[in-house]
Image (cartoon, rainbow, N blue to C red; front, side):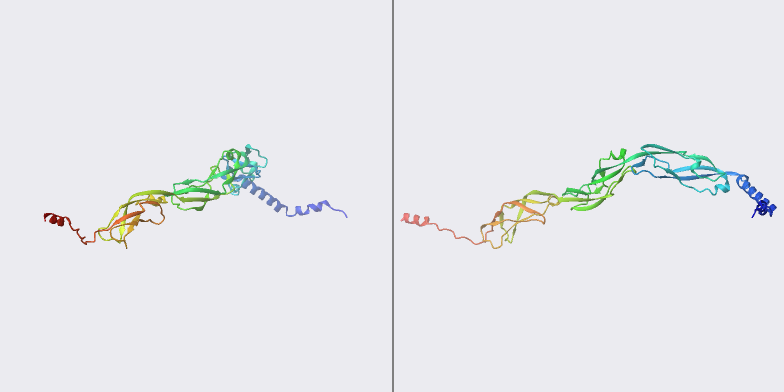
Amino acid sequence: MTWDSTQLLVPFRRNRKLKLFSLAFAVGLWIFVNYGERDTEKTLLVPVEFYNLPEQFIITGSRDDYIDLRLRGPRSLLEGVKSKRIRLDLNDVRPGLSSFRINADSLNLPRGVRVVRISPAQVNLDIARVIKRIVPVRFETVGTLPRGYTLTTTELLPDKVEVSGPSSVVEKIRAIQTDSFDLTTLTQSATHTVNLRGPEDETVSYNVEKVLVKIGVQEIVTTREFRQVKIGIRNAEEGTTLIPGYAQVKVRGPQRLLNGEPAPAIDAFVDALGQKTGMVTVPVAIVLPPGLELVSQEPVEAILRFADDGRKKPRPTKPTTTRKREERR
């Protein structure tokens, strides 16, 4: 069986005029679209994406995260140009300055669209090596405890954190501070969670963001001596007196009670109930406000002197009168 090559051209010979017209129309339309429109310009802000950066490296300093593009071409083509990312492969970077040129080839623009301006035309990156260090945490406080209280202990959990970042920055960090903690209202031991103060350099990170702090607070205990404390007399008749009338008392207790204003009310007294007339020795009692402890007192005892009961005592006789009469005889 033989083939006639002329038979292959038969489909192309049919409707030849229509095919030629369609071809001419398509070519004319393409020319009109690409060359018939008046060129215009368009500005795009294209984000830059960095990828494949090795884990042991980090980008430091300022960098260009966007590229400003000025494009020129037919309006119909420019309207189809969307903002795309410019992706920069950082797999081969080394510590130091790395530069990447931005050109039209990396933009994948349609034919007929030209780049008028690229700003910046070059992206510069400062690459640094990442290191990790363990540094202590420093508990920062503000204000002072209320009067009469003292700070005994502060325990941080954890008391050290791991700092990660560029070697040039991390090597200078000596301690990590917490946010300031207000002591002005603290009157007892407590446990609180405090935030770590964020690093000044955004390229630095911590392995924890908060720590637990246990704060030990204790009352200050002191001793104070009170002189000239008046000793009262209970259950005594009018005219009863006491010797001595004042006591000297030494007291131990919280500083806020002993040194505050007004001074603590100390009650010193003797009880005359059931005592006999005349002069008797009775114990001196001391009553203190709650929270205070008696260390010593002077005197421990006092003398009660009762008033005269009003009865007349018999007068003694005078024998000398009889003697004088006998002598006269």
